[in-house]
Structures are given as structure tokens and as C-alpha cells.
Image (tube, rainbow, N blue to C red):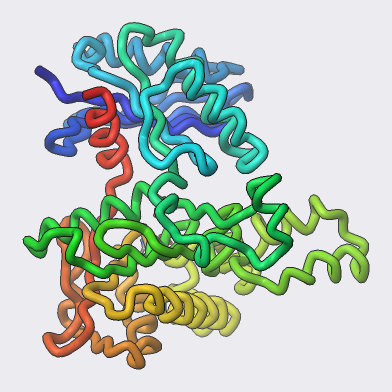
Amino acid sequence: MSSNILVINCGSSSLKFSVVDSASGQQPITGLAERLGDTGAVVSIKSSGNDKIIIDIPNGEHDKALSTILDHLQQQDLLETIQAVGHRVVHGGEQFTDSTVIDDQVLLAIEACNHLAPLHNPANLIGIRTCQKLLSNVPHVAVFDTAFHQTMPEQAYLYPIPYELYKEQGIRRYGFHGTSHRYVSMALADTLGKPLESLNLISAHLGNGCSAASIQGGKSIDTTMGLTPLEGLVMGTRSGDVDPSLHHFLCSQMKMSIDEVNTLLNKKSGLLGLSSLSNDMRTLEQASQDGNQQAELAIQVFCYRLAKHIAALAVPLGHIDGLIFTGGIGENSVAIRQRVLALLAVLGFKIDDEQNKSAGKSQHGLITQPESTPAYVVNTNEEWMIAKDTQAAIQ
Ligand code: ADP
């Protein structure tokens, strides 16, 4: 029997999909629908061995995008092979500690988390409901970004604010990127040939969004993101940690509205804000090499804060069996890994420059010297994790 899973990641105006063989991780077909609801709405589809196909769906919404995608799967004789649909859902609150087959109760419970992720969960729900209508003959499974971190103890997830805000409003740290942190920790244990239960790991997912997590015996015990994905590390356009009084300062002194502050911290800060140039690490590395001081400064702040957070994440672990770099920056930037490990000499990291240079795509590479606390580059694969979870949930 086929083990093909359709993986859907639905945003408010975009929808990513892939067909993933949950056994092998192969992705025979992937694609993206963009600018949904707009005159320029478009679906692009890439199947292995073929050129990318672009299909215009002017003013098309999610239903049009999905029916276009499903028609294409039908033409490729793939539709019949789909066993289930795995939906990425950003926020599962405290209710969801694992991936879950979706029924009416689950839909209501996801909806009840909408206030915790108002930009993401409603869009995820549109994806689920549309897909359920068009593919009603297979089970649908929700895979939550937050679920992996539900094992954090109270001392890690509580904010030091009045306790009733947690009890009555659910205001606490949740953490995100759980699918990636889980995948890379499992993949590293596999590569090392050691049981995951025996390992104390720190994983640093460094993409456009960035977060790091302490993972003890395969369970998240602390992470850098909080109630929202804004907390923690410096990211492409997000500030990460700032003084909580900054909001008050910007509103009272600069007459900004709270929404303007929110936009500033989420969309105009981080690498982009500091460099005044770009949110893209490749662009900044090039600019820094060309002598752009502000680009260099942005990289320095990024690395310094990342190193401090990684050091803090060592506290609950006691000792570190491995530090994992993953995500677009973690997997590809030789220089960022070098800078961060140099800042972390206090934890016993000693980089191996040659191995650091050769680590990267399609390797699980050790990048430190034999006597060092080990650090690795592990390529993440969130789609495969979602497919594996979906397969497990329907069994
Ligand atoms: P997303 O979080 O959107 O999935 P990615 O994981 O693809 O993003 O990461 C995007 C980031 O990775 C960008 O900042 C990009 O510049 C960076 N990146 C990709 N390749 C390199 C590279 N060779 N060197 C430095 N940074 C890189």
C-alpha cells in the first residue's frame, strides 16, 4: 500500500503543499499557491524530473487553488495514492500535545486557539475545511507547531506576571517550530546510532524565523519563543527579546499605536531593522564582506544573542551531547556557525574549520574537534515529519 501523504501548510493568502512518501521522505510533487484572492493569484507546481508548471487562477481563493492542485495530482495518477492529509497548524494551545486526527471537536478546539495566533490559526482552519470538502474520502490530521513544547515544565513556561493571567487567559510561553526541533533531534539520534532517550540536545532552527530548544531524552524542556513567535532570538524581521517597556515608550514618547509597535517589532526589526538593508542573511554576509558596517553589526547582534540564548538553554540540560544547527542559516552559513561556536567557548565548543566548511546539504555533519562539546549541522525536513506524524495518527 502507498504511504503517500498530502502535506498542506495554509496561510491567509498562500498555500504550500507537497506529496510526501512518509516511509522514505521522497516528495514526488511540491508546490505553492500565492496571492490568493488577488488578480495575480497563481499556483506553481514542481514534480520530480519536470519543469515547474505555473497555472494562473485570477482572483482564485483557497478552494480554487486546492481544486487546481488536486486536478493536477489526478492527472499525475497521484490522487488515488493519497492515504491522508497532514495539515500544519501553528497553535494548539495547551489542548494539543500531539498530532491529532481532525473531527468536529478538534476543529472547535483549534478555533478556540485562534486568539493565540490570530494571523495563522484562522488561515490554517480555512485550509483544513476546504481540503476536507474536496478530499472527503481520506482522514485529515492536524500537526501543531506548539505540541512538541507542551512537555516544558512550569518553571520554563510561566511568565512572572499575575498567575491568574495564565489560569484565565492562557498567557504563558508555548514555543513554536516544534516539528523542526523534533525532526532534527530524531535525525541526529539516528545518525549517531544512539537512543534519543539518552541524549541532551540543543537545537537551533535558524531560518527567517529563529528559535532554539533544550531537548532532553527527546522531550522539549525549554525554548526561546513564547506566547507568540516574537520572543527570543533575533530573526529576519522580528526583534526577538526587547525590554517589555519598549511598547509603552514607543506609544507614549513617539505616539505610535499599539498596532504600529506590533508591526515594527514583527516586520521591521531583527536583521532588517538593524542593518537597514535586508532580512536575508546571505545578502548581509555579502554586504559585510563588501565593508557595510551596519550589515556587520546586524550579524554581530544576531550571533551574540543566539550564543547567549544557547548558553541559557544549557542550564536545564546540565550537559550537552550535541548542539544542532538547522534551517536556512544554520544549514548553510559557515560564518554564522563559526562565530556562534567561538562565542560559546565557555561551554567547551571548539570548531573544526574544515568540517564546518564541508558540512551542509544532505549530510548530518559534525563540525567540532574530537575533544569539543559536539556541534552538528542537521538538515531539517518539516514536511516529512508532518507526513510521518499523519501516518502514525491514522494508524
Ligand atoms: P524559512 O524560515 O522561510 O523557511 P529558510 O529556512 O529557508 O527560511 O532560511 C532563510 C534564511 O537562510 C535567509 O536568511 C537566507 O539568507 C539564509 N540562507 C540560505 N542560504 C544561505 C547561505 N548559503 N549563507 C547564509 N545564509 C543563507
